[in-house]
Length: 110
Image (cartoon, rainbow, N blue to C red; front, side, top):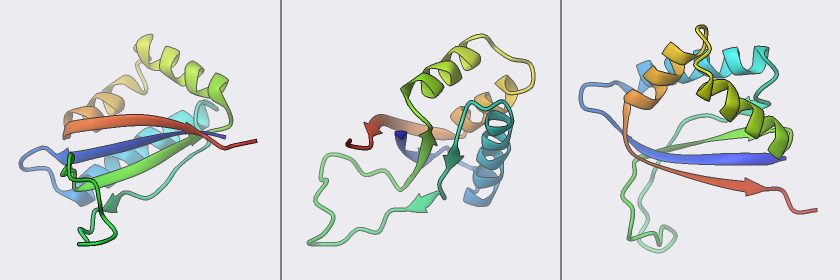
């Protein structure tokens, strides 16, 4: 599988419950179009003096989106670039509700 990890902070005045609901709507649209396998839960960072060693980033939240493979992820990117009327407003809301996003991609080892 191919995964995208997103670390972020919420924009001012956005409640985490509202953000989770928007992300769920976007994920459902992408899954219905077979452009996403699943989105994991939004997790809140828990700073730990020994176990949390990332001193460069202070993001408070993260989630992981999983795709069957790189091709499905690439198709999802093209879908978003094409500005699909059904998913574009929801994707825009998902992105506009966060600040300082960091995206990284991972693949399961063979």
